Figure (tube, each protein chain N blue to C red):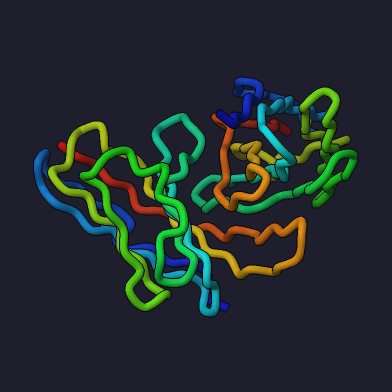
Length: 112
Length: 118
């Protein structure tokens, strides 16, 4: 079945460091891809999305590109801040379906 | 405006008891979803409503789990004969169909109900 695999955390970085969180997926058809973020004490929020191959989603300095050839949707940010500390979830909706399928999440801790 | 709300925020029950978890979606959202998130894992899909009907209940783990949405707004997730393995955070999300292929309707999540089965 459809699934999402993302790198295990925690990821610990110093402020202003470059961030990459890897995400790969398995899906039939043409899924849409997402990154959700869960800040401490808060609910899940959509960070960015891409609905077709080669689309780039971006928000708050984060970017991810839908790569169909490598079935990947890696999350990147050029310069992280302490306020980016959170758990990040990669997810997909299978083509023609509305349900989200999530990865296990990656915890990011950014230190001053 | 108001987001998705869920009550109670925490529920502790004993093994074998019956529980109900409530979700109030964003006003006007016709689609409603339930997910379950176990500790250290990503949310796992349970059921999806479009209006009053369950359009996809393929994620319900067994017949102890049931959900309703009788008026197309508030939804209740019901768990019978609870087991310790049911302990998790139960998340509700809602969305408003935008239509048009490829269609995606952003799902807005509530804060969740933390269920603990002793």
